[in-house]
Length: 349
Image (cartoon, rainbow, N blue to C red):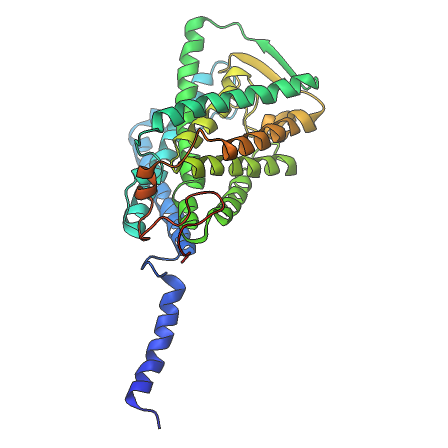
């Protein structure tokens, strides 16, 4: 006959097992559940902001029009297209910032700044180097295309003032868009996986998701998806080397900015900003080199550069995690376990 203690033990064990499936040894939700909560929070915030925008659109019809992309894009309505992308980028960034703030505070007891944009000692240098490296990498990609006769470039007739205004507008848009995508793919979700299961699973999962998020883009292909996954690895390594998003965001933004404004090429299949460029570019055959209508990210020239960049950043001694960022991202762990790409400090829990 069972004793009272045995009955209590039998009742407690299932409860412990259930708790263990949701909560880890640091008394936090397991990383997979934190990703689910983050995705749900982002979806709710986006719905609320969309509802707010819709309400404002009722009161201000002009705003409602600006929140819609024109069905046909021409030189005459290119300014409206620019406003649409600026508002969309700002709304997306606001959504991801709110979701990241809530999840970082409530699930990991850390600040929004620690998710990526903390003003640590080397943030300015990392950001400046990122702008230079990303733009230079895209220029090298186009140079390879040109070497195969797969790129054609011609200059538009624009005044210096008009070009300067377009430059500033597009740079702001691409910085907001890159910050959104980096917070989405290398922010809270990536860091939750990194903290609990390590850098390689975090890189693999988030890079694959990053590639799949672009699969519905116009002119996307298996090759462009592969390159986008590779770009996710590149940007993930950039985060791991610095433990902040300044470097990755700057590279991401300057790559896209150079693609569109400098060379006038599609970026991930998007051609809506084709009238806002300095040069007018075309991807020519062989499309397996140039990427064709998808842009450089769909071709082998980008593959070569992305592999080179990833290996170069991984091996470079220019970048290292700032101690302030390591401490900021530690949250439940007594010590930061993963401090390099492939090594750990302490036990994984």
